Length: 360
Figure 1 (spheres, rainbow, N blue to C red):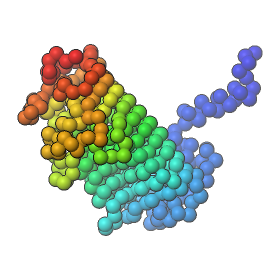
Figure 2: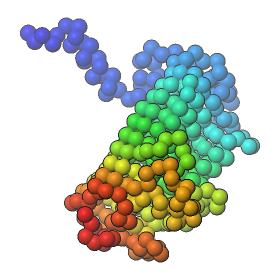
Figure 3: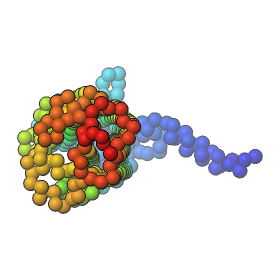
Figure 4: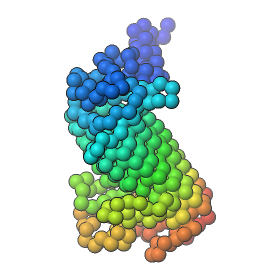
């Protein structure tokens, strides 16, 4: 008999079974967590306020005209569905954010909820350690759809973000975050990773944004570096939307028609993506100082960061049909590099145009 038997084997089998269960099954009764149900017409915020830490809050289908703030650990907000009807959080007059989780909300989860029409953000997580946003839909919010900032150890999965006047999914100054299996469209920026480290952007669909996917390092923020970003296996198509960003915001300065852009971040791997039909450029690697040119900022404004992209890798991508409408100063191509940084290289890509040519 194998030494792997008895209680150890049972524990291993139980662990394997748990991993195979849908997260919602776990959250709805098999995980020994307390749960409450919010019925249509009741207040989600009232349920959050009354709940003990570590409670599942199940939300019946319906439209809830309210904002929700979570400031206690282990709260899971789980939308229920019946037929074609689900849970929608719609903005009451003057509401800034749909769902806001603070640093006290460790282990926060939000799933199967549509959040729309808020003045600022659909979902904002501020300093949250351990979070999951699962199958959340954000539509027509003023700035960001999903916005974890200074947060760690999180997953954004199966979400849809459209119509945001800045960015659909924006991960800011955070570490150890995965964005996977999401769809972003009709935003100014589809997915943006700002001043982050150890972030995976995998298996997403980005189309009809001004820019599909961006990884960048900006000045003037608390976090001064960005590295180890993986942009892998995404489909990035026709991001040629007219820029409708707020004229006072940086996003309004982004040139239309960019597939994937890496600005100033180090050790960024752009690999195995399909990038097609973006009129300015398919995949761009450039210095953060590019923004000084595009947005009219003085170069001195970037003095607190190293703006050069170093040790970035672009490989195994299919980048075709891009760069058909080059822009002044930068030109346009399937693969575009401004010559800045050290240790960058391109290999095994399928493309027709590159600038400069050949690329290192």
